[in-house]
Length: 263
View 1 (cartoon, rainbow, N blue to C red):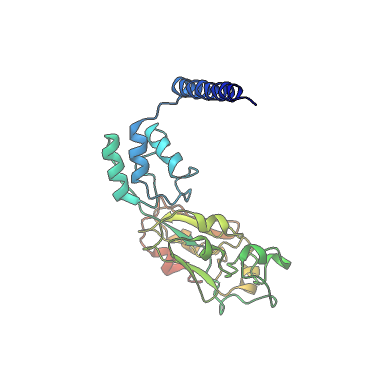
View 2 (cartoon, one colour):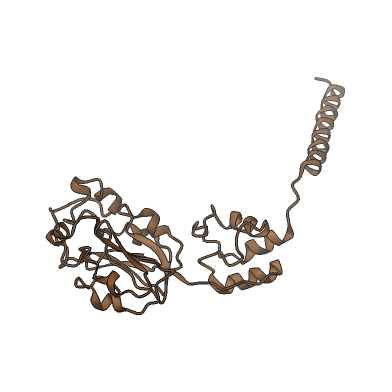
């Protein structure tokens, strides 16, 4: 190829490159999406755990929702009140009251309370064990299996297996809900951290059947409902349920419970 041909090819390629660059630049400017500066500021204040505890896919989505007015400024469970106040300042609004929440495991069936139905040998993962015979090796088919799927899911070291049952440290818990999401027995719920009574049982069996497999399970005797002046406790399907919005934390239900599973 002659030197002239090389020069012409180089000019053509360079010209095409310049044209494409100008075209993409103009297109980017024309179709760019304007971003509210507050969204970036809010995102920087969020902790970045991307846990989903706020109900959104991650911190980016949460920041966008706050700026759009679709999420409360204090909606991040990990950041809590301190982060909520900073975000409120960015948004120019009041933070409002932030109620501390925590995860709670609805099971009191420790090793000495709820026996095993058979010997299991395999992976230490509740989700895997729950696919075994009768939903796992625990005699109570509703009870905590104790193989620590929730422990592995918690990035705050707020839940541990103690005597065969998962137990939450409310001071360390951020109420992100990851432990609840992985529990195959649906035993973990997010509740107010202070001032409420809690039932450590999730069995839906009748009282006599519960007593066969657990020394502490709820038998649906309804004694707790009779002493609750706030009407916060109901018994459905032989299991006591507490309305946390009504509960005053007086402790009368705890004193009356013959199975000692209300705390």
